[in-house]
Structures are given as C-alpha cells and as structure tokens.
Image 1 (cartoon, rainbow, N blue to C red):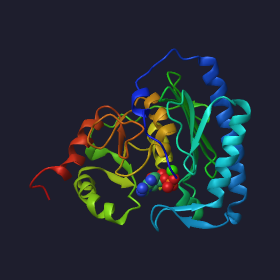
Image 2: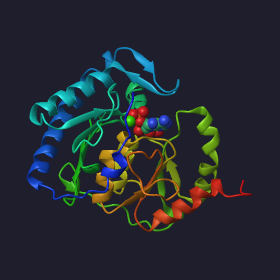
Image 3: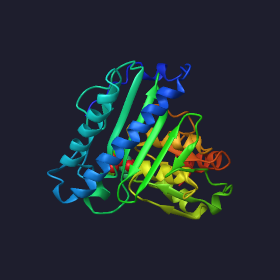
Image 4: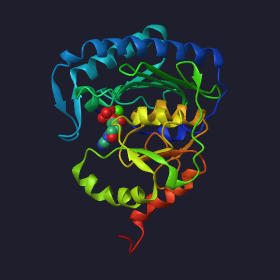
Length: 286
Ligand code: 2AM
Ligand code: CA
C-alpha cells in the first residue's frame, strides 16, 4: 500500500463554500453502499479467502477486505464519476491535491472480523479540499449506521449523538488500541502505565473507527491510540466533531492526514489526556 502525502497538508486549510445538496446526496449513497457491502461481508464470513500479513505478523488482511473495497469504490464511482477515490488496500498513490476525495477503509477491525468478533465497521469518508466533511460507518454485525456531515450533526440509526459530559479523568472510560509493531508496543507501554491508574478503565475493541463512533455516542468518554492512520479514523472524526468532541495528535498538535497518533474526547478531558500521555516523554519519569 502506498500513499502520496505531497501537498495534502496545505490543502487541508481551505474551507470553501460547501454545497449542502451535493454533500447530502453523497452521504445518502455512502450509507447505501456501506449497508450493501456490509450485508455481503456478513453473509460471506466463512469465505474470507486468503489471510495475509501486511506491515507485521500482527497486521492481517483478507481477500474480503480487497473485495469489499472494490465494491464500495465501484458503487460510488457509478454515482460520482469525477470524484477521486482511495482505499486502505489501494495499490495506487493517494491523488495529490484531489479536490473531492473519498477515503475508504473497507473493514476497520479486520482481526475482529477474522475472529468472529462483532466490532468491525465499513468506514467511508469524503474530503473536500483536504478536509473530512462526511463520515459514514456501518457495523454489519451490530446493525448500526453512524453518519455525520459537517455542520449537520452526528447520528446513529436516525438518533442524534452527543459526546459524554464526563469531566474527570478518574471517571473516564477510555477506548484504546495497541500498535501492530512489537517494537512500538514496548516503546509506548509507559503511556498506558501512566493513564490506567488515573482513569475509570480501558476498553480495547479492536476497531478505532467504531471506538470513535462510540465516543461520539457517549458510550466511551475518550479515545487514544499511538499508531493508526488517517484512513482508519477520517470518517469517525467527522462524527466526533459533530457530536461536540475535539481531537489532536497525542502531543496535542493538530491532527491532519499525515498524523499517526490520536486523542479524542470532550473539550474538558482533552487537555488532561494530552498532559498525562505526554509524561512518557518527560525527563526522569518512569
Ligand atoms: P485495521 O483493523 O484496519 O488494521 C486497532 O488497534 C485499530 O487501529 C484498528 O482500527 C486498526 O485498523 C487500527 N490500526 C491501523 N494501523 C495500526 C497499527 N499500525 N497498529 C495497530 N492498529 C492499527
Ligand atoms: Ca483500518
């Protein structure tokens, strides 16, 4: 998998006039195609095909991921032929300066899917001039559709979502995930050591996209992960924002398409999380 990062950072700043009608149309089609492909991957879980390792022997991909991605892209291309498309399993480079770009993670939580655990989701994001403006997640084994459009609110199966109002870290249930890289697991373990005694508890559901959707729905109070990519979370971040949440990289710096760490929560918990997760980097701290 390759993606070209070239000028993507620069085009992230543009907030042009948004045509609500064209966004609504795209969100509707994205929900439709996600449900359609969701039914397919649910009904055909016994025929996942070959399972291969990607970046490491803990990072798995199946023929089903590739098949699902093709279905999603073909389905959307039919309706929006002039838009650009990129998926987690794409071999092509991410199109530089694409103005209207779909970003697809065909199965977020592939390991769960292969282990018959229900926490996985089809994730479809739509970027306008480098900024994610539509997020659609379909969780086929949970019967849940999450969707949001910039300035239009976030929803689950028709019901509006709001982020939790938990303001104390000691009362916060925090979703997280561990790096696939064994070396990085070793390096990052201090972050978990610092945070676990300070919060209510951790939940590690195996799909960053779904955990962020749960955050938007108030089912978790915060989320952080030290190693993930924009395509894992792009769609879900629209949900988080529209539900009243904020997000950044682990060190508090603004998140963008090149980031590979994430903290998300309500605005009161966020600085507390940045502070405690940064302890790992302070001198003389164990
Ligand atoms: P995936 O299922 O598409 O691989 C699990 O920790 C969550 O983080 C999943 O959503 C997983 O997506 C995502 N993730 C992406 N890159 C990762 C990495 N390098 N290490 C661990 N998780 C990663
Ligand atoms: Ca993913």
